[in-house]
Amino acid sequence: MKNLNINILKELCLTPGISGVEKESGIIDVIYSLVKSVNANTIIDDRGNIISKIENGKKKILIDTHMDEVGFIIKAKISDRKFLLGLIGKINISLVDGIRLYNLKLSEIGTTQAEENELFILLNEDVEVLIGDYLSFKRSFDYDGKTVTALALDNRIGCFAAINLISYFVVNPLRGSSITFVFSQGEETENTNLLEIAQKENTDFGIVIDAAYAQPWDSKNASAVIPILGEGAAIQHQGENFIVDINLIERIEMLAINKKIAYQSEIPDISEGKTNFEFLQKGLIPGCVINIPTRNQHQASSIANAFDIQNAIKLLKEILFAYDSDSLS
Image (cartoon, rainbow, N blue to C red; front, side):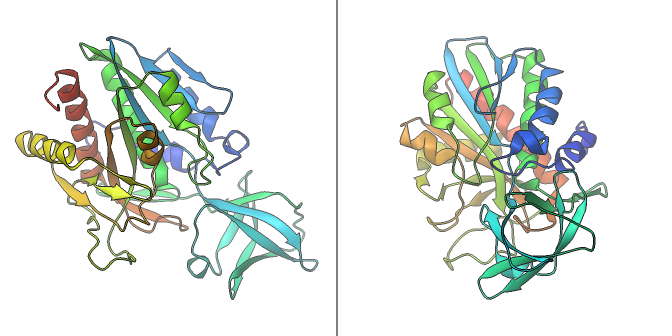
């Protein structure tokens, strides 16, 4: 991946980070170490969010990318080797039948079994679990020079983009704007306090970086516009509980055209396409959602394209330059 350290994305994807137990999973410590190494002005707050600031102006920009992932929790014992599982985040049970699951120490625990609308795990021999234990899919990562195939690209891929932006803007700060980067916890379980952070920072403009749906994907709405792998960054128009200002989207699209950055629209049904932008919008904070197309989200393995990652980072840089120079308004 030209000019991007793919090993950072690999480390992010191979580290567990189940929503609600991000600290215990390990992802908080890994991201904090990576970000702190390039920007000393980085902290972990009392909720487990990682906040990294580049302060160089009166205008306040906030960039959010969530670090947590979906997973499973042991809910009840059915028999000696069979336990009922609870879902952490939105997971389609029919797509995870017969999948091996692992604990937070990366040891294999057993195999899932879907029965009607419930999911169970059949434990391996000599394995013991406790009610309340968290489990995840098998950690995996592969990069062939073009395609990334890995677990938890939603949203380690957004974290990867944000780390690259921090590395760039620490060296090349904006002239009149300060940037607060938030690696937020709890997005998959709707337990984020992003709005509180944004208000505390007196945010003037917010950007959310997330993983976009990528085709093939079955939307509830036949007229939904779903991005294609390899065709550029995704500019999300709407999602669950939010609609982005169309005038701003048109200005971002024109910016991408002028800068020769590949982009595409993401317009899921209004009941789909969940991101943290809904919380910024509840606080009447203007902004946008720039995503990286990712196929097979919330499954044992997802797929993304290096071209899309690179163009998303390019577009995010240009949006920040344009906002700083008042050319987005």
